[in-house]
Image 1 (cartoon, rainbow, N blue to C red):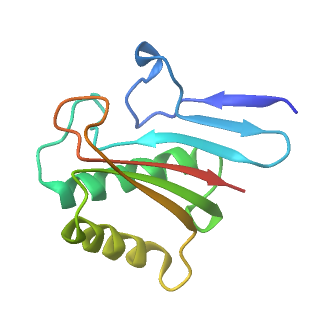
Image 2 (tube, rainbow, N blue to C red):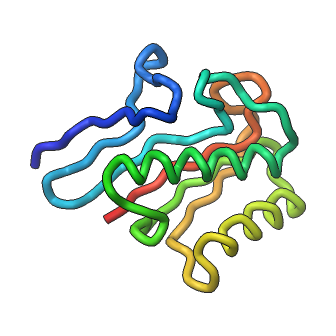
Image 3 (spheres, helix red, strand yellow):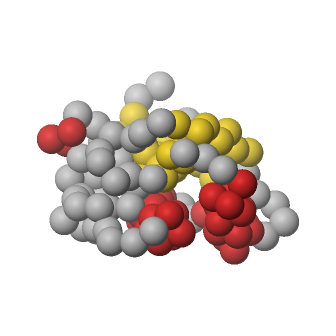
Length: 129
């Protein structure tokens, strides 16, 4: 199965860091790399955990749109939370409920010690159809 790599306008260029944002397969699967709270300049936005979650999902929306998809096409999420606790889970749950209501996609949440860059508190990747 062949695939197409997409790095959409509106997201920072990931290639210097060794990855691409989106891979679309001819079979209809779309893989979105970890989206974090980066502005279009590639720098971490100012804000707390909740702000980072909102920006990460905004970036996920841009990545999906590059393949003509929306949140409704997501079948799996991977979420990564630095110093995970119940308060952060509540913030994430509220964000997901605001997007998917009572039918969220499958999800694996990992609590991690740190992410790729200093100050990153959250990251989300996705598989869509």
